[in-house]
Image 1 (tube, one colour):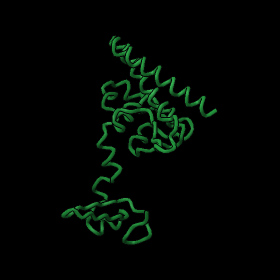
Image 2 (cartoon, rainbow, N blue to C red; image 1 turned 30 degrees about the vertical axis):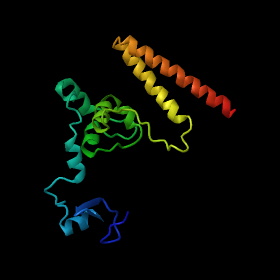
Image 3 (tube, rainbow, N blue to C red; image 1 turned 90 degrees about the vertical axis):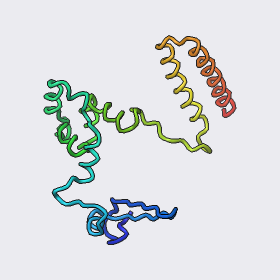
Image 4 (cartoon, rainbow, N blue to C red; image 1 turned 60 degrees about the vertical axis):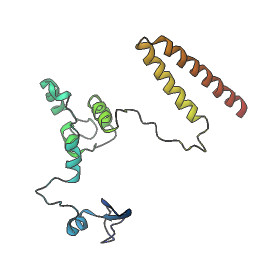
Length: 179
């Protein structure tokens, strides 16, 4: 989306104002937002990226151990040469291989940023999802069953087991009907 003021730069500041139930949206680039007084991006202040990364204490649990700090300081991606410290400062990887190089330190970050989730499941449109909704529900029930067994809640686990059987039968019927 282009800046509404200069029509040249990409809009990176999105300002929404609601007055008496009437919503007004303004989309500006950083330069125009600063000129209009919506944001102050002077060199003395933090950039938006620095503000966002400061909100997430990426290594709060890992920084408790000095040896881990030392490992992080020297951790480098073999392909692009990006260090873990550079990643933390920029908030961006240098290449796709960085995911593997820094893998041990990413789960706590992903959990914090994505409300405890580390697995992306996406969204499925209701009209065209077909069996995908049932398959996803089956996966969730299987995870729940494992947790119940681990917690030794065997009566609840038996109910979930029965739900899984029923859902598997439905999926099998749907597959047989499509063939």
